[in-house]
Length: 353
Ligand SMILES: *Cc1c(COP(=O)(O)O)cnc(C)c1O
Image 1 (cartoon, helix red, strand yellow):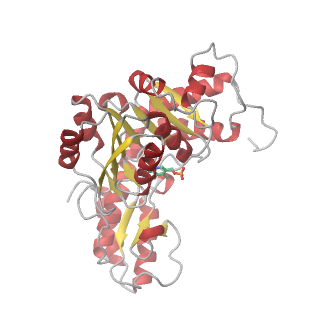
Image 2 (tube, helix red, strand yellow):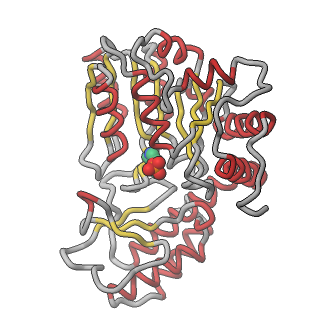
């Protein structure tokens, strides 16, 4: 299909996209397709739930969690932060203590951190929140596809996903699942975005809860069709199979990196299957040449401190990982064979060692 001369999105197409997103999230909740990259959906969610008088426990293990907390605070919420140094994930214990101390009404957390290669123990934390009656909001943009995201089983009230990471799809539209309890909380917030591109309730009231004969506005049809295709492809391969590729790619990268003498950026276990971050061993190391391929450098405060192996989406393959290891070995000026072999061994028994 060419990018040009396409008809606007039909109501049946939008409904189908929502159904696919619901399948990917393993939920029966409403799904709203937001018209922008996931960062817009996250802002819409933060401003919808961050009501004045609400105590929000925000877990910050990377840059996306930090900005989510800022938005909730701007919206009037009292935000309590549980933070890591961006080189470790949060512990269930730290969250349990913060819940006991602050009695929050909601808990927000990023599942996988693509920037730093960590995965927070969201299933356990969601169980804690559920037991305490706390609404949970999960940024699953980087985790969806790379590892299970089980919205109903884990009791997640709001989950945000996009197509651009492990689903190898587009970045321009995103999906948000919303539980009945989360809708109640948003409806109770007089400041929640309405008549706004950030509004979840506009979509619910003008589309989800209608006879669905007419889509309000002009949703992004290229991006919506691309996300539909990405989800169809992912569900055809099977999310467990895609999760498995990412787990193997992670294991292969960690093993190969160890053979090169490199250590993970994350100081504790909880390595994200979506991306592996490695510590730059000393200032100036790995600085030479253009590493390229799926190897990228840290952004912002992480410049010069870590490098990322983006074995994400279609790059969750042994070939892509081995290519990355060759680039790292060349930059370090060390032997390549042990790393390439270690990666293959780990790929074939990802949970072996
Ligand atoms: C990539 C990503 C997003 C989405 O960011 P965009 O700027 O919209 O691509 C959100 N959260 C996390 C954890 C991510 O990794």
